[in-house]
Image (cartoon, rainbow, N blue to C red; front, side, top):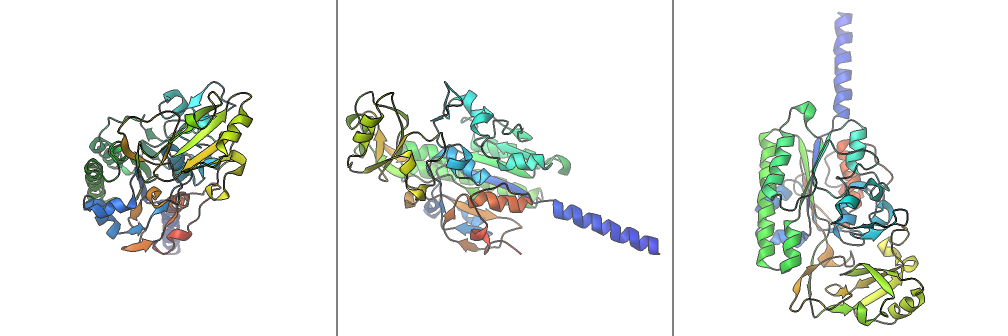
Length: 400
């Protein structure tokens, strides 16, 4: 009898330990360029239904600069761009001479040196024997710190939303031992439409509806598969109306040949050419309507930006809705842009989440996107790397 009791208690001790170590599946979905107010347009019934079963935030502040690669890497590392190393969609690094990182430079995107300043969730998970899978996410194509997700894909913009979702469903339908516990899924449809047509356009609403339907299919599939899955839906930034009439011509402000523009648009990233720093400095720091410039060491502290060596010598920020260009814009241009002050309402990003770890019908206020990392690490029961976020924003929305 004593032996049976010992076996009984040993079994439950092992089962309890296994349970403590087994995390729910976490599906992190990014809808690039999706503003929270897009939910109010009547074209996203699935996202609204999911939010009602879980938690919806009033909005999420992106990190500066409010553009795609820096904020996607912030979401999965908990470090702001100045600390995660991905300071822009286009950047240079003196330790990687002769290379300009850009979203279209496939060799650079897949070079771990650009990403190794931070450890994304999938790397920590794989190190802890938790299987991961990424259906597109900035950084997931490189062997960051020598580690890749178990499943990953090279980004292909022609890969339709429905196919992306089906790929994720196929991963989740695997036997338990082969099923990923952390999955990312990325959609670029809404951002693309917002840029080309503007945030208020019918085409943007159509893109919202398309992605909403795809996410609805995934949500229904997790139920049919009886998965204990937490789904978190975010965006990297919002979108503001822009047009040719609201343009700041840098080539009409700075002396010819005095700078190289690494990035332009809502903000400009500038390096002076040899021997021209003083001339560029003098031109930039005159008063300019709709634009403010700083040397990197004087960027306002609210932006948490300027310490990383990859940040160029000068940063200029346009008033929301204006653009900084180094040439005349295309005649008649209008559309959407981002990269503006993260505190601007138009830059606010989406956050909603649902699943067994979240209370139903919870509402939370605006928070910084660095906090998403801390939340996911808690859900996966993984040790978090040093980061800039916290769980404070989510205390009222998580089940005990």
